[in-house]
Length: 231
Ligand SMILES: [Mg+2]
Image (cartoon, rainbow, N blue to C red; front, side):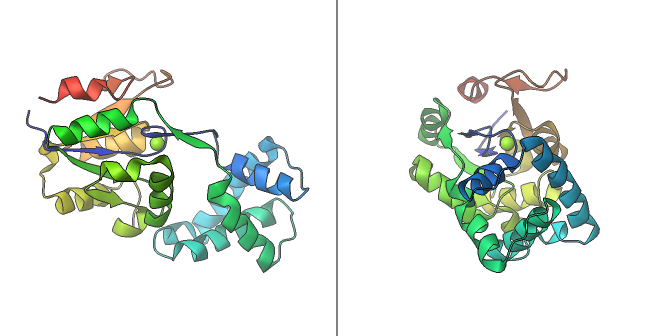
């Protein structure tokens, strides 16, 4: 097998976040404004808001609207579901605090593995379910930007989300590699593993906490294991 490029998911694969659910970010922002809501309530309303966003086609605009516009609509919707009266200024405050309210750090081996892949002459890519400018925000702050990805694909670049084949094909086209020459590493079975495998890439599931118990999947527990799978 000749692998020429290794592509990664970001959250849970290269970067660890101190949250299990994005609603925790909202909970923290609301708390900073003196508004208390339980995580259970936020999670329930998050699901309801997502359903509404699907029904009203807001969800299909993720990646198509400019990020500030999309997040303004989404945050207005979730706040409304939580019964919080929010004027435009309040919604904008939630938007602007979002990325600075999540705690994050690289996994211990992330940097050395990326640098080693680079040293071996492989191309590097990143595909994340976020806007490209948000991906850059976190790469900048974790120092990962310097490892030099050849391609960074956000939802706005390919106008769709993993596991849609188009987002993987978009990245492969930009990298000028065939699917069978590319490895994809991610922590989500449906979006990452099956999505990449579906377009013919060599998929690896990173299962750090062994939360995935599905058998028959090519799994690693640490990014270092990638190195032994590539000549
Ligand atoms: Mg992930």
